Image 1 (cartoon, rainbow, N blue to C red):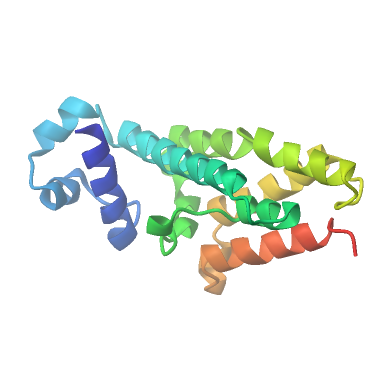
Image 2: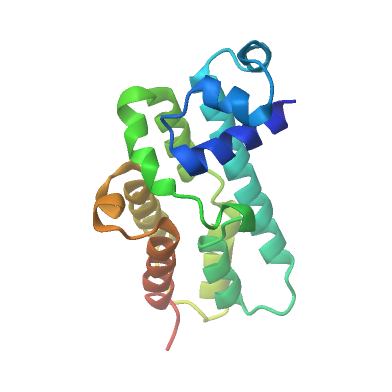
Length: 184
C-alpha cells in the first residue's frame, strides 16, 4: 500500500508539482484520504517517503551500472554521476526549491540523501587514480563540488527561471566534472 501511494504521489507531483493536495492524490489513487492517512500521518511524511523512494531507486541504478561489464571505468563513473531511473527521466526536479520554506524536514531529507551514499562513486575515483585513468584529485573536494551543484539545481530556482531542464543541467554538470578529471 505504501509503495502504491508513493508512486501515485510521484505521478501527481509530475503533473501538478509539489503543491498537490491529498484530495488530488486520493483521486489519482481511487481511494479515500482517510486510507492514505492510515499509511502516512501527513503530507510531509509522505513527501519524505517519496524522497527516500526516488533516492533508493537511484542507488539501485548505480549498483546496476557497476555490474555492467562492457563499460570502461570513466564510462561507469560518468553514468553513475548522471544516473536517473528511466521512469523519472522527464520528472521536473527543479520544483523542489520550494521545499525549504514550506517543508523544511523534507528539504533536510533531500540534503541528507544528496550527501550520503557516495561510497561507490568515491571508490571509482580512487580506482581511476590508482590505474592512472583519472588525475590525482581530492575526492572529497570532488564530492563537495558535485553535491553543491546538484543541491543548487534542486533547491534553487535558477533552473526553473532559465528554463533549463534538470536532466540537461545534470548531464552538463557530469560532463564538466568528468572531463575535468579524465586523463587526456
